[in-house]
Amino acid sequence: MKFGAVPLEEARGAIMAHSQRVGEKMIRKGSLLNDDAIVALRDTGRTEVICARLEPGDVPEDIAADRLATPLITPLIARSRAATGRVNLAAEAPGLLRVDTAKVNRINSIDEGLTLGTLPDYAVVASRDLVATIKVIPFSVPGNVLNVAEALVRQGGSPLTLHPFRRLRVGLVVTELPGLKQSVTEKTIEATEHRISALTGSLRPPIRTAHEESAIARALESLIADGAELLLVVGASAVVDRRDVGPAGIVRAGGEILHFGMPVDPGNLICLGRIGERPALVLPGCARSPKLNGIDFVLARLFAGLQVGPAEMMRMGVGGLLKEIDVRPLPREKAAAQAQNGAAPRSAPTIAAVVLAAGRSRRMAPHNKLLIADRTGKPMIARVVDNVLSSKARPILVVTGHQAEQVENALGGRPVRYVHAPDYADGLAASLKMGIAAVPPECSAALVCLGDMPLVTGRMIDRLLAAYDSEEGRQIVLPTFHGKQGNPMLWDKRFFPEILQISGDSGARFLVGKHMEVVAEVDMADDAVLRDFDTTEALATLPQRLRPEGVG
Image (tube, rainbow, N blue to C red):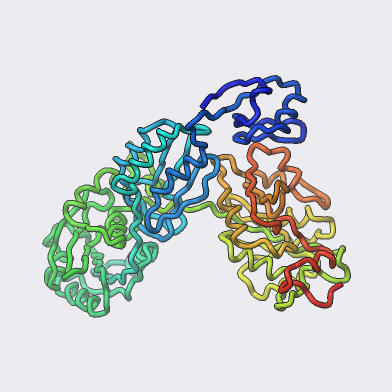
C-alpha cells in the first residue's frame, strides 16, 4: 500500500486518509475518491490530497478483518459485520471465557497491521457481552501477511472458548452461634443468592443449623436429598483448618476434603471438598460480602463445568490480590472489572429509546394518525412501540401530549415510561426536549424514534445500537437508504445539552452537520427508515395488512 500526498489528478480511486469538509459535503476518511470528490477538492483550491493507494496483492481492511474473524468463531461466540477494519466478537450465552494467551500473542506478533484484543482469560461474560475485537490498523494489509495469520488461527483451532454456565441447583448451610445477629445471617444468604443467580443457578431453601459437625452433616444430607448439585457451607465462625467444624461436617456426610486455602485475598480461607460427585465448599468469611473475592473465582469455574482441584486452586494467585491496602488503594468494586480471573461482566452500554407521540397530527385532521388502527386492529403507535420493545433499547420513554390519555390507552399497559410534554403545541422540539430530559443518567445514549414510522423493525433498531461506540467516535448514528438519511437517530449523551437548547418545529438533525466527524451511517436494505405516515395518502402506501380501513 502506498500512503502520502498525491496530486489530485492521480488520486482517483484512492482511499481518503482524513475526513475533510468541502462546502456542505463531508468526504469521510476511508471513502474512495471518485470524480465528484476530486472536483469538490479542486474547487476549494486543493492540488493534492493525502490518501492510500492499494498495490497488487493488498487486501482492503474490511475484507482482511472479515477473513481473520472467520476462523476465530467457535460455538456460542458470534461476530459482527466488518466495518472500518473492525469485527467484534460477542458471547451468545452467559459463561466463562477461556483465552489461549500464547496464541493471541503469536497472532499479534505477525504484523503490526493485524490486531486481536480479548477479555482476560477466565473472564465471566453475560450474553451479548463483547469478548474480543479484531482491528486492521491500516487501510489494507498484504495478502501474504493475512494468509500467515489465517493459517496460524486455524492451526489447533481458535484461541477463544466460551464455556456456558450450567443452571446448577445449589444448597446452602448457614451455621449459627449464640450472639450472632440475625441481620448477618440474612446478609450472607442474600449475597450468596445474588452470586448464584448471576451464574444462572438457583439456590435451594437455605438450612440454618448449629455450628456443629453433626448438624452440618445432617443439613448437607438433606440438601442432597433435595436435589442440590453444589453444596456450600457458611460458618458462623470462619474456617481456620481443614479439620474445623465445616470441613468435618463434609467428611461426616460421606465426603472428602481436597484442598484448604487459596492464593486469593480476600478469600484465603476457603475449603474445597466433595460428596460423591458434588462439589462441597466451606466458604471464607468474606463470602458474606457482595464484593469480588476468591469464592467468585471458584464458583465461576464450577458453573462452567471446568475442573477445580488443588492444582487449579493454586494457580489462581496472579490477579488474586483484590484486597485494598494503604499502598494499593484500589476499591474492590473497580478491581472486579480488572481482575485476571473471574472478572465482572462487561456490559453493553445502556441506550434508551425516546418515542415521540405528542404531535397534533394536523396533516391528517380530524384523525390522530397514531391512534388509527390497521387491519389487524393495532393502532400505529402500538405497532411502533412493539417494534422498539423487540429491540435491545431500554428503557423506552413515550412522550405524550395531544390526546395523551388515548395514546396511553392504545399502548395497553406495555412496559414503557410516559413523559408528558405540556408544551407539545409549540412544535417537535418541545416533545424532543422533554424526552431527552427524562433519559436516566445511567444511559449512555438515546435513540429518538418517531411515532409514525411503523415499518422500522426491532432488527433495524438493533443495527443502529450495535453501530454506536462512543470511544471510537461513533456518537451519532443514523440509518440511510440509497444515500438518504432517515430515522430513528441515536445520540450520545454528550449532545443532550445541545438538544435541550433547540426550539420550534424542527428536530435535532441540524446538529449532524456540526458534528460530522462523529457520525456513523448504517445502510439499510429497504426504505422503511425514510417513510413516515402523516397523511391519508401516505397511509394508502402501507403494506396491505397494515393499511387502515375507513380513512381517506
